[in-house]
Length: 352
Ligand SMILES: Nc1ncnc2c1ncn2[C@@H]1O[C@H](COP(=O)(O)OP(=O)(O)O)[C@@H](O)[C@H]1O
Ligand SMILES: CCCC(=O)OP(=O)(O)O
Image (cartoon, rainbow, N blue to C red; front, side, top):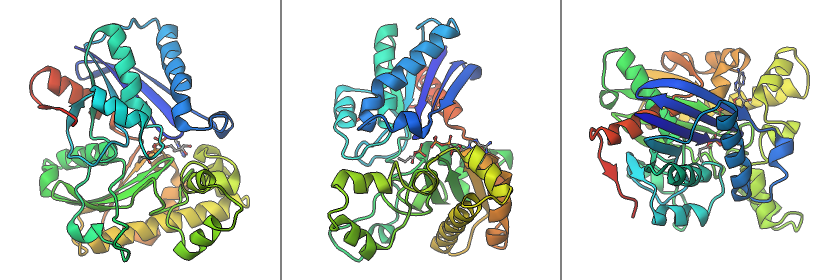
């Protein structure tokens, strides 16, 4: 079986071809702020990202001949984990999603390419997987209920991989998983369910290459009513143009962490502060799990940065053992999910 996998992230697009479980071709690109900022809306990046994908396939002489195409899932309504067919309702919801994020494009591009191939299009464990415990939903304002929006696919895939490396089941473990990428989410995984996690899109948790993270609410309200920013601009400060992009004008952590390591300011000061906010969110999830944590797993692109990991370690290493699993397991996880459905080993869920 030949599976084509599409994974648009906030700062990158990754694609891969799998022959059964074997990755036979994988490529991707980091999209610089200078290119992404030319689009008014993230949905306007559809052609840009699709053309990038089609060109890479053509350059590699790969025919559009797949048994399934699977794309990373976007901001649908809250749902349980699993594999979903991309249907008309899902396409409508992605095209009209309240929130903007590149992952909304994954299933849409998958559907277009699948149509050309005459094969099914799927998505799996989208960012809206919601397993929050009741206490984690309430805020002090009854009209504001917390939402579960996070790197569900990678967090669960990495946690399963770690559990199986110990010969254990994910469902039997108590883990904290910190996905450190363009956006960041840090989840409390209690026996296979993510009972609490920062909303990676909406101003919760650490600040990151392009997210503002938790903000002082009163000062945010002042900014909203200052007349200095439109609603769209404020939302972009929170997600898209906040964090390192706002402070340093770049989302490229490879360059930024090198400069921080060399002690160059303002890079060092800003990266050190970002790491401090990551540590605080890990601490919060540790408390959410009553301190009964078997490991803290660091994953995502930034877990490749020795500077960040070495800076983070002393802030959290007294809590639980730290496991560094850099990058992500999203591509393999998407491919295995599609294969599971094609082989009849996994149920195919219908999005309603
Ligand atoms: N080797 C590396 N060292 C430091 N940062 C890295 C490295 N590789 C990737 N990154 C950074 O990780 C971030 C992207 O992480 P990733 O998990 O791919 O997230 P996304 O899906 O949000 O694009 C970018 O800021 C990128 O610069
Ligand atoms: C929308 C939650 C997932 C997320 O933040 O992804 P990126 O890190 O790719 O922006």
